[in-house]
Length: 141
Image (cartoon, helix red, strand yellow):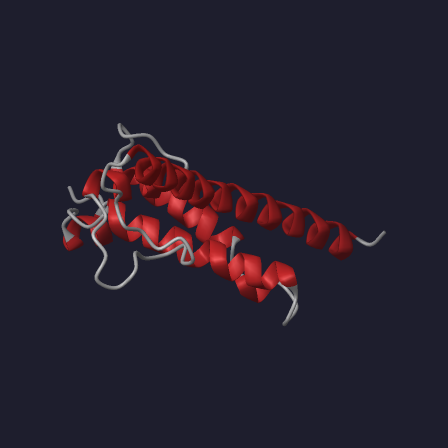
């Protein structure tokens, strides 16, 4: 087996695993919403068909959005901006659809992962100053 084929197989396995993990987050959210409806409480309206944003006109509690975003990126509540940024960069780079042949299921999975990761990063960094986002690692003496 050639080295390129081996690398491609490893990358394909990683993307498929991350896609399944993110779909699991969405399924957990759907199950929680269903349980809320069955219990008679008012559920938070989320888009179960879209991994990246709530449905237009929907109301999703901020805590729920942040919890979901943290699960997608795999970070904790105590994670610093740098940890969130590193998790985003790692997942975004590995989920790059251009690494896969066109019209392949892996390319579609990678695009879905990238979209979800970008949404999660946006949710978790919405209150971070744009200057801090851009120049966080810049050291000035």
